[in-house]
Image (tube, rainbow, N blue to C red; front, side):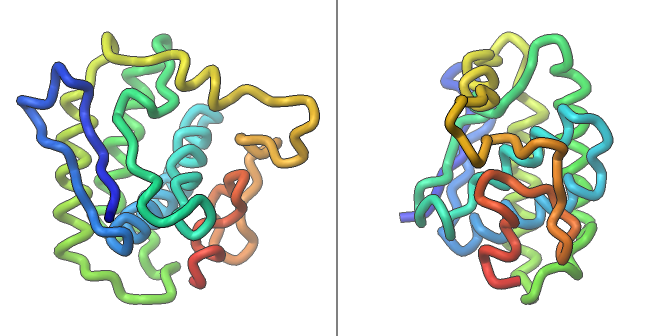
Amino acid sequence: MGNTISMPRKFEHLVEPLGMSNGLTSVFMEVLAISGSILAKTNREKELIIWLAQRDQSVVGIGTVGFEIEEMPWTIDSFEREKDFILHTISGAIDGLGWERLSYEPRKDWVIECLEHFHLMINAFDKESINMNSYLEWSEIEEDDDRPTIPRGYPKCEKHDIYLSCHFCILCNNGS
């Protein structure tokens, strides 16, 4: 089954979709969540990492966390800073930033290859392709929601020091 991360149609000729097995997808999301949690300073940066951490297959289901780059919660006003932050997060993950928090030794060559491909995708993505509805729908707080999509105050896992999503800690959920 696996998961696919893809570009908007107008970019498909530039960068092909990134397909990963379910296991590789889990490692990919975990190392991005770790790197981004170390690097995030602003609330927007924290939100981008929380969005990625919500792609937790152990909670939402195997093979269900693929996405299109325009579905990420980009904002038009801060797009360039957000894009720079995601590129910096990917570079940190490629460099192994925080990988010691994992309870296993990932297959580095496979993960790095996927991270490099993702870096190309983010680098090619442009402001004109943002779907603002993605951010608005994702960030909306419903009155009766006791676990909001974006946890209030941006709490971190006490054990792993990464941002919690509405599914809690992606590393704890996966047994790290």
